[in-house]
Length: 440
Image (tube, rainbow, N blue to C red; front, side):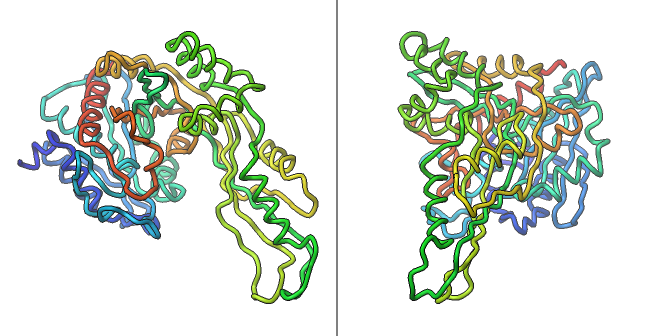
């Protein structure tokens, strides 16, 4: 198959993308971006590259429309997280196809999405489609490590690229979720906020051979136990309430009636604990979250340290502030000689514009007449937080029809990351329809 026709087998595009090791840090996305550039120019596109670091470029490609609607943008990133200390069935950077899946780092997050976007753009160009407004493709570096060389750089240094853009499609959303025997397609319309914490535990030090009551290490154990066995308070807000209401209405009595009780804080956690894997996915939608990820303390094996520092990955629900997070964590820990400080905070999108939701929902309904689109709060963060500073509403929309037993989120950033070939093709069809029929 010629390069010009590779969009007909987007799984082959994905295989090539995976074969570029863009583990971030350091990223080194240049060769991967160059490959994408070659694909786009092969069907007649012009591309522009923007770089803060020449080895970490960002690509912009624009399809001219009729000028009857504002531009719409699709965007994503080609950098990936590490595979260190993970055991893989197949090499993570080979991009092999086995059992109907493309295997490799980035298959889901998010080279699979980039393959869908590139293939959809190539198909639109090859078929001579002229949409109502311009369609912009933005391929970014550095999403997995703060966006300094990617989205943040583009928004701060090249805002002209985004002129007129009101809506953008990116990660994550549009994949099916089975609840109560029905297929739902969550479309991301909001995301949580980064609120990294430094938790410092203090206590008496001493000789490692002796008994030092209530020392910092013992307190650390108690702190970790509380963080791992208890939850911060329940909060019910948009768009989770809308999502649950719609799911409950579709399921009816008795399952739907029980689902609606999730919106009553007294019942929320009780029901979440009974929903199994589905409940695990919903827990972060109702709670500010904090997970210990880095611990530093002690310099010598025979010295009990008097201070231990712990970095915790905190994620705030929309509308909450770092002060809210600190107060909730302090109440949960409830211990003297333990301080909680904000290490890093990045404000998320302040509001939700649902103006494009019905259009995207209709695309999914056209692809799966049994599917029910619902709004989604993403419990992680995306580059959408940078675009929001320019007033752009991001939608997580990478359509995928997945097997019911495929636990999507369990493979993201994990070993044996993979995506069904059929899901990649489904995604191309969904993006093609969403972009080519967009009318503002």
